[in-house]
Image (cartoon, rainbow, N blue to C red; front, side, top):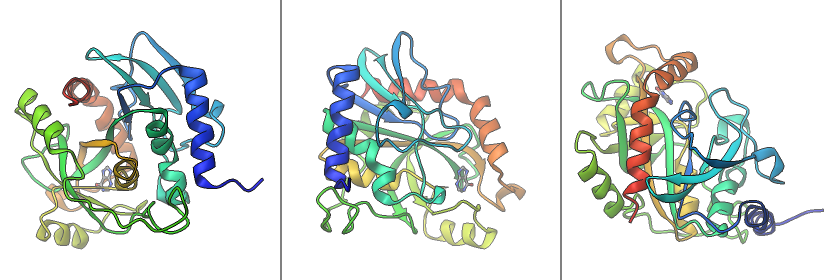
Length: 270
Ligand code: HPA
């Protein structure tokens, strides 16, 4: 049967409601290496493969499980991984989980990822809340054929990353530095010349995800906060030659700090 995207999302939201009960206040999507940070006890856990139509991540570092439990006193759903454009996924597939979490009733979306740092003072292990983004080629889920109703949505993106939520997080964790994230399609890492261009553009961190989900969450009327765990310096900075192995090793090494930031982000949601 040929389902519309809206029908797929509605079916997923119904499945979430019947398997996991009332919606969480906050839904978090973890990125590379955040799996350990997102572990909650006690929590219900549901394999994503049991949710019909939920695109399941296959990249190492992404756990295909949805947990629901309490974090910092809030009811939170944590999805252990995401799918990416570089896996050959469409924009609608990349954001289907976010749309289903919003349709279930989650009003605040927390998006976490791994990214490369362009600022010497943001050393690997730092967490960077987004002030804004620059989309350099990630697919847009609001284009015709990818949106819920199939039509193009002309969406305002001023204050996409919720200023109030970010301010509350920065007040709770004053050592964090917020910055601008550039999204690239990957999966190859940047050339040193591309990193030089990004620096000239005022970019602070570069990664291969998150922007499509932020757009879909805003389109669904949810608040959005995004935070990068900086796992490496971007190519050419301090002689860096990034690799997925290095990204995952750094994420494990800095997982305890990331877990603290995740808890603070959940606890400061407006
Ligand atoms: N570039 C792009 N994506 C990334 C990086 C990087 O250096 N590190 C982690 N994800």
